[in-house]
Length: 247
Image 1 (spheres, rainbow, N blue to C red):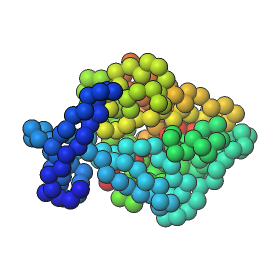
Image 2: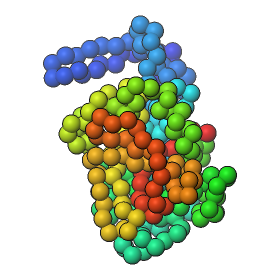
Image 3: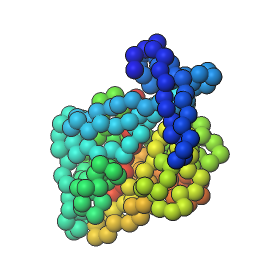
Image 4: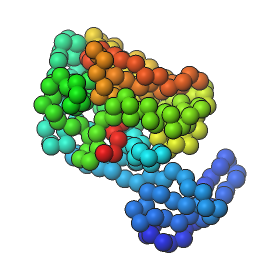
């Protein structure tokens, strides 16, 4: 859609109800205005160094990747090792990634899982485990805990539900409170245990890294159940999802 062109979006709400909504695009296509003048979240495309394409969503003053990261390279083109061996995963102290159950078919729907060394790019607390490289596309970064807090505080009540993709295509039943009104479209990636030999909760949790260091790597967790979004820390060798934030 070009800037200034009035268009009609047809929204299918249930099996029989079809609603037409007037929208006006902004120059960059990321903010739309409805016919009644209310702003709502819109998505546009972002590509990483490998050509993987992601939706994005502007939420308050922040712009977020609206898909789980899939990249197997830093944004300078350096490859990360795909570690499938359990013993290697459990002992490595450098950047690595894998797919849930070591099955590449999970990449498109759930993204990749990374250890914390892959995202360790916090100048204040860096463990120098990845040479200062950035796994996010240029102009984007793995968020700190403070930046995650800004997102959750902005959403307020039922932030967990406002962040989650609706329905049961990826989340396990009952996916309490899911509205995705933020446009963040949280999809559960599950996690790989730090011992490497087991994968858990692919349909129940979206665990994502932050760059904040608490003696262990900082994380944020979104639930299938009706729980608040939680922030805590995990062993660096856990395999968790990543969402990127625009600089």
